[in-house]
Length: 345
Image 1 (cartoon, one colour):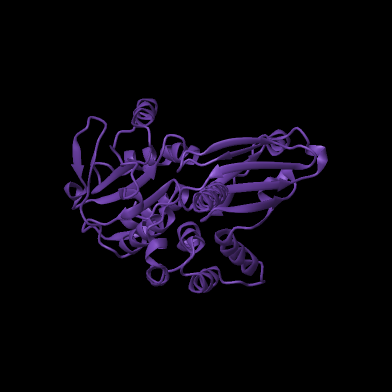
Image 2 (cartoon, helix red, strand yellow):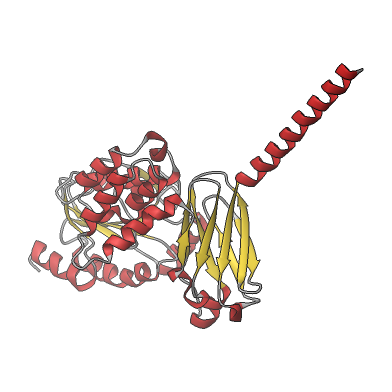
């Protein structure tokens, strides 16, 4: 009988420990955002969103504090926005926080300028803070700062994000060296893959590089080969329907296309990066653009990023008849002047 009671007590102890472990696992598998703000912002809503993971959540400031909990699933960048900032400025500057493990992250700052908030508790975000702190030094060389921070944090998701977001300040060869030093799991993260694509794209699209053939569909679904334009000067134009400066630049492109088409070996090839094919086609109907229009794939290894390292729109490349890149990001009057010099009129 005594032996049976002992066994029962042992089983009870094991079950209790199991329950404690389960509760601990539930707690430690979360990312907890704890915010501190002036009590005058009580009642203000804080929004969390993540277009990559699909996370969305809302909190309300109460007695100067707010809190949001999300399950930790993958290393990522969660975005935060403040209702107070939107009301004051008519919009908000997205405030991103890097997260690469279950943790509690503390955020303190003015909710009317939320993007200036101070963040602590995330090791990945600490890496980003290292970059910002060193960039405040007078005369700081951004490329050198990035290289230093990455070299000191090779196993951090923050280093991958740093290369992905700011690596274009580096020469592609230097950025590649920094990227190759990252740990294998960091390279496999979302921003690790994105950084790798951009760096390889930058190497393939630097001035003087030869553009290898690629194929993309036009508005009728017909695949068009870039190689079919060999023998002409080609202005390669990356754009999107939501990009105001892109639409404005079409005025210049229409002007130069009318001037040089048929008189010189000159073509324009526009590639939309729109995720929505219908939005792209609707804009084509509105703009009535007379040159070739293609649509890029929205997946991570698309032509725009993996072959041309496009990180902003519009982005242009002027390519010679042999497929060599002559110049990048010529727009407006600068583009007109370059073509006058090139063609002599």
